[in-house]
Image (cartoon, rainbow, N blue to C red; front, side, top):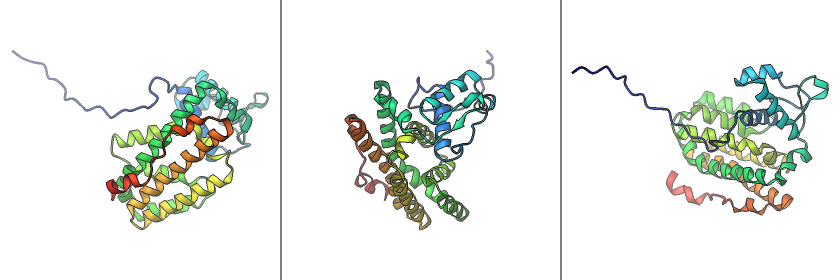
Length: 262
């Protein structure tokens, strides 16, 4: 009896999505554009690419892009004056925060807070794994990035992600970080420049630890970055909207990790 040749089985790449079943294409576009607006890639007063360009960029239909842009405008990030294109705005506090009064969005807010909690937890193994991957040129490049105006954590996150090649940790880190983009406005704008200043100070400490070869300190400071975002947003939600459920998300403490990562 002869058997046909069976092709070798190739292991499937690890897949994980914390929002499986609800992560629609247009919400991905909204998250990405929100991040780019928040980090200054699309500055206030400039225009986003045309719908056709965005559709090609994201590989979706013009209808999907239009839906995403509609939600972005509803949240106060953009406006479309007389059909001339989509202009980027400084975040509008009234429009951006209004959806928090909606029950469905409150559930999304809890998902966001839990994703920040997970980023705190993931920071330790991610930092320990990637620290040895940074060469001297990488450190010089990172130093230049974090000295620029803006949120230094975004540059550090990007460089860490490029050096995180270990699956499934890489996938979980990337997917979880995408969920945190939901609350980009709440993380940085309502509290003003003070939170960004504190966050940048922690990021600088993380860089200094990385440069000194202190992987555990690097991990602790990276975790502290996400811990600061988590606790500041929790406080804001509870005080501004009496959304006390936000305080139910525990803050992972530093001491719980020291023995495991020394």
